Image (tube, rainbow, N blue to C red):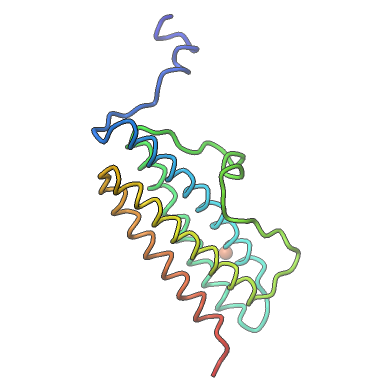
Length: 172
Ligand SMILES: [Fe+2]
């Protein structure tokens, strides 16, 4: 088959050269793609609550959730591009996100503001834990660059947990 043949082009591997090895590329890419699906799911859930929150703390919660959604969204492009730098392929569709995501959607008509904060706190805590697991995969393969990115995203997730916790505390 000729190179110009569309069939050949479709089958051509999208492999970028990496000296970390094929197994590292496979394992780290798989871990990152799961985190990417989680990030998109959590981004949309945070926006969902940003849009639907109500009550006396509306302005505070509305703005807090917007900041958090922005932070989560900002991580998605670097996660996907890290996968490509490792020679892997990344997500292609909303359908793929829904098949991979480990963050549960919340399509309820009404959620109380405190339930929103508690649910997001739990989701962000789980996300931090899953990023730590991905960090161990990076350590196994000496992938310090992905590990370093993950360390910042873990810190961000922990910051979101902190804010969600403090914002939901009852006044003393
Ligand atoms: Fe908005």
